[in-house]
Length: 72
Image (cartoon, rainbow, N blue to C red; front, side, top):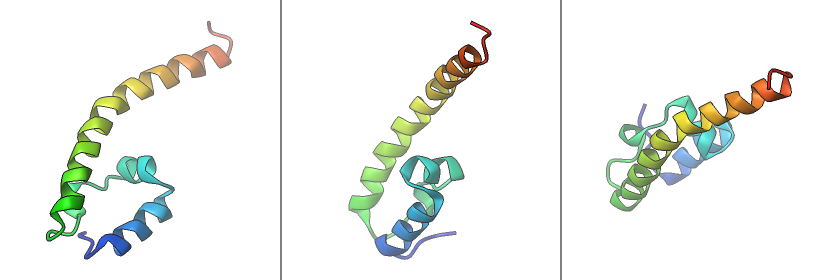
């Protein structure tokens, strides 16, 4: 599903609970307005950073979760 403008995309991001939730939900560059190069460039940078961060963040979260369960 593509969003026609920034306002429509903002509504979806807010609905999902913020940027991280929107990325987890699966919003990607292909979903952004095709005629908004500035937004698409910024989103592409953010998406690359998030895709690198997400597995590391999940690993650390799991380590903390295990510790809270008394395993460590």
